[in-house]
Length: 166
Image (cartoon, rainbow, N blue to C red; front, side, top):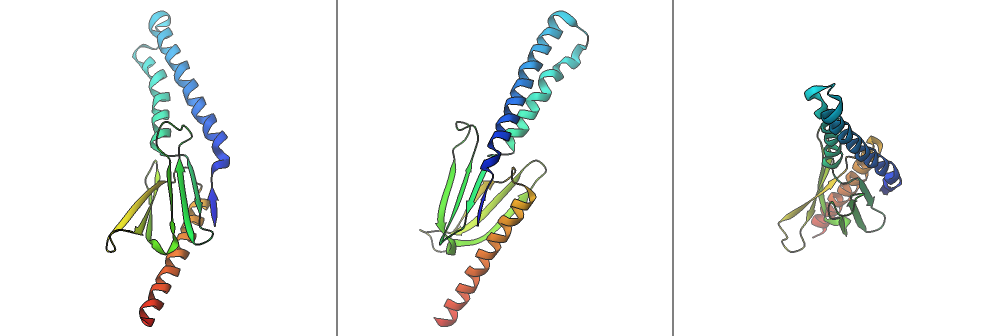
């Protein structure tokens, strides 16, 4: 199964540009209020504060672009920002049989996917990989969960068969 929200990059770019324009307009309004108008008093700080809070919220939600591919024997995860210098791109590829479990954490402002996989070096250790999925729709998250459940179920059946034969 393939899942990607790359097609929404223009929407995310528009929202980010709009927030930046609101910050500039708010800053100009704040300066104008303090130097010329004096109509709003101390509330004029909201001209700057609200757009900055929107920007912080937009960035706190995490990386905007999430791509998942489970076709074939390997699973691919990609997670990146629309602004390349903000954070490093996460790119993971590993065989399906290494997936042990997953968890989707749904907080108020963000959603994260935690995938637990078998470690290559330490056979009794597990590695937990984190991905930002805040910008996926509910249907996309449901499809992602379905695909991961299917992989985990196949892994458990293969382990059961391997133990009964061995």
